[in-house]
Length: 481
Image (cartoon, rainbow, N blue to C red; front, side, top):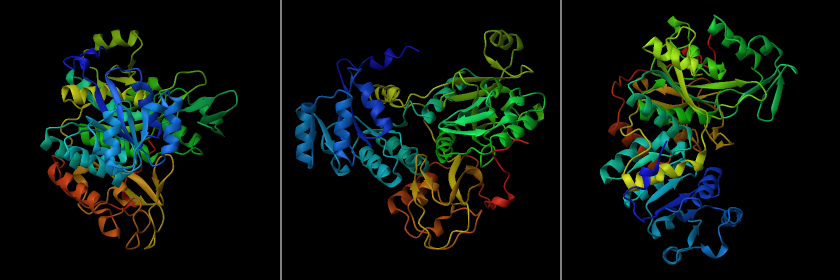
């Protein structure tokens, strides 16, 4: 794709950005790539650990004399005026200098929202990397950006923006989309000789997989058997649910089941799996957003946490021609999968920053609505006084199972998962019950305001509030039988 148009009309202008969570993984990839783009420059970097941030910048080749530790607004302004990068630990100093767009990458729901809201209020665009923030406050921030004539957008390089962009592309072409989604972060790698399956650095016995590498005629039975074969490995990362909540609200595609299906699937099978049940697939409803666990053999290419759309094919000759060229088409020729087997994190993010600032365009999803809610159910009985700590690589919430609810069936008292994070329960919550707003003793007031105002301003188009059932009466995800 030729993206040189992003620089058109920009002249010699340099797009200047501020970056929060600047010592993190996404931030590093963006800062590394920025050194290769003359028209893009970091000017204010915010992180709680400035020595660590300085060390990372040194590794990336940023000269030490071009950096300045700043502890007040005057120092920030002076550093940026002198063409040095201001390093700050205090987020209140973010707007002490001129820049065009904030890249919010802290992963902190309350802090990230506060910084994004302030940036928009003061006339700066926002590229949201923190899906935790977006899942609670994205609708509020989108409304504020619209009011101010600014851009609020997901960032290319993360799966939400990449998938939203792929959906936008498919819709522009008039393709009839049945399902959309992504793979889990880490593939399942099956070694038939050893009879094992590995996920990242964990390997478990899975001898049954050797006989399940072909999908066969009974798709759901094969997927059920595969799920049993890899049951020793974890399924269903909280981060997956969060990302799909962001995608759902931007696209209107909604979960087919609140735990998502998570089929163990090979890339070539996606078009056979993600089709309606009456056609042999797993979907109870079309227009679904979902996640699959990519199964491959050693040496086969990875899906790399990439994204996909499954479409109805239409003209059989066209799609048979495409099948012959290696594209993924279902066995009956009625469905096809189109996919991007990558997400390059901050390496891709400059596309978003340039497009937002130079052309006033987001990375897709121009009218987000409350199509889905990332919520949580108690895994066990949780007594009053329990602190719902958020932590770990996937920002899990202690004692809570992430679920993705269809927006049209979510009552107003359901708490979004990342509003509940770090709060204390005011009353006990039984196992399987959803966390509700009234259960939280100390929800962040600003984040709660953002949640309520966003849903009021951008409701689900066909919202008809009904009670959320207990887990015992909900169709289970992660299985396809």
